[in-house]
Length: 194
Image (cartoon, rainbow, N blue to C red):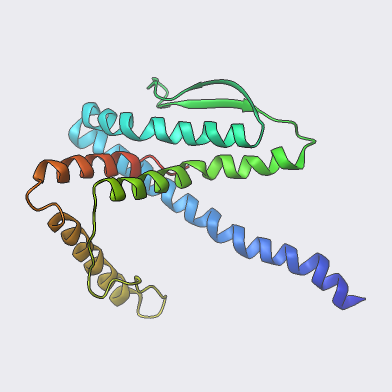
């Protein structure tokens, strides 16, 4: 009886806990970093570069929320893909759902994560559209472990730098495309997190 209770009651709760807690911590870290990067960009370069990048990424962010709302049958009250407000809000999707529906309640989780999925999908599409065929020797996977963290972080940083150089070199003879890709990737990447 005790084994069955553990398998069907305790093990699923523990699995969910060990899956969701790291995601929550990662989400909070990303949010903290993003808010500080946005603040620095706004303070150092003013509102126009900030809003220019936001005008690229925010509509995709809000459209991802909107699409997920539709998939999970939420009622859309109103939305704006891009309308900067004095409160700092760049866009919004107001929706409601039936709290008695497990499907619609589960949808809230996916609606929250939708901008990351949509942003990654569009970034992969951009890589395909810009025909970026680059290979970086030694960057099959990024080395991450808590052992020797400073050395691993340095190695990862160098590999990311190598990857950036390889992307740039794939644009040889098309410098305007490098700039366009960079602006689109920055706009989308900086606004794809919840």
